[in-house]
Image 1 (tube, rainbow, N blue to C red):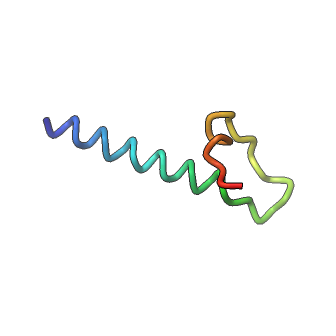
Image 2 (image 1 turned 180 degrees about the horizontal axis):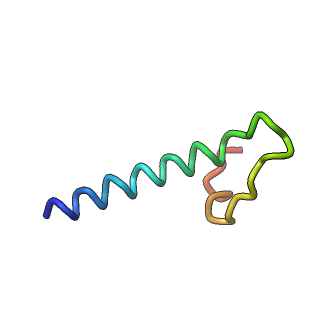
Length: 45
């Protein structure tokens, strides 16, 4: 049961990190990595 709780925490952190990454941009214009299409769907604008 503890393993399942840890997996949910890791999944939640990964989701929130990808959402934050989708809504921000790199300070160096030419270093902006390409986002997967699933992450692009998380954008707010």
